[in-house]
Length: 370
Image (tube, rainbow, N blue to C red):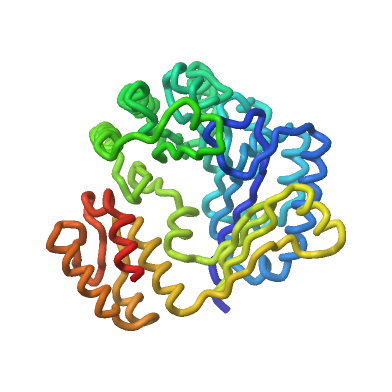
């Protein structure tokens, strides 16, 4: 019997320092709390034993927070405590920050079977790193990349933030980043939240500057042999993020840990987003799920459009129509209008956004949702 693919996401909610722009669930805490969390996490994993055994684990992703904030002894405890099936995944990604990359941790990861590292660079300008509240400096990035390569990792992603402010342009950073020749680059426009420290230092940029910044990124990476396969992601051919592509194609995935999200069939659920509540739920023998939503057929249809259009390959219309029927009259009119405006292209049974359309993605999705 053919097993269904299942992605696994494991959330490690710890950081050595909270960045001034970060709105993710993360904690700066001591090793005692981290040790308790690792034990809780392994307990939650054990509750899904039947699901794991019946599935083909296609990808495994350790995200955060900063997974590399775990000390070596806890990193070893976590990796050795996970089911062997997890490490049969074709792609296993581990997020790290430059200041917490060590030869010892890399050796542990490599020996466990991790084959992809994602490094939170964000900028290659010390002045910009300081305003973002990052814990590392530019030299730490070069040192970390050298250690990662020396440890035998041949699939490296570097994260970069852009559209920060006109005083902190991305152009120099993307040029320097491309020279390091990672296999994959993830780019994220800066989001500013009023309740976070960064909002007191800078404001959101104008759309014109945002588009200029991304145009510089696309030009530099294109000249270096990268291609844009998704709204925010570039890779060398064959090094696309399999975990994220599966997410955008709505392949089932199981999220483990505090605040982790899952998609299992027609059900989306999310865990509690508080470290103590997560611990107490598992301690009492309860499930740490905070919210569960059963998707309607209409929900699933819109998700297939919303997520599929993030990919430059677009949405497979044969699959879409077979599952969900024809587009509504309003959707047909919107698609026709956006096609005339150069936002959509249709070929060989696929509907995809053009590069110009990707820049207008939110506007397009709002109309397709109505």
